Length: 141
Image (cartoon, rainbow, N blue to C red; front, side):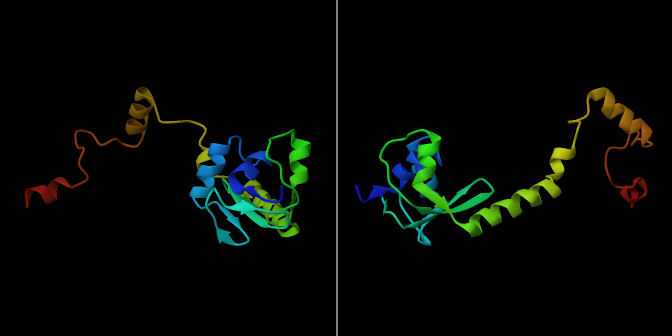
């Protein structure tokens, strides 16, 4: 075998859990072969460069072998070799995510409860009977 469909190769190389997921990601444009966007039926051969974006991580790999069946992870890792630039970029991105975490993850509490909301309203002086942001003097004019 000297050629294999890209969706089947991505599945066999364990980039995606199912072949259907691999085909969907290829359709969404998250996979390129030799810098060109591809369709799931595009065939790859040894020596092709495949760029795969999975979530925030982009990996660029060189196809070393082909396999039509999915095997254990150590065997699947022999089907490709990640480029040095890709490894460095992935490590930089991981370091960046570690140093600058998502702001939403810092929220320890969720939405306030009814009691908590009442406490917030009373502590801030409250709005009283007024719920509108307009001033009462402006409403009379």
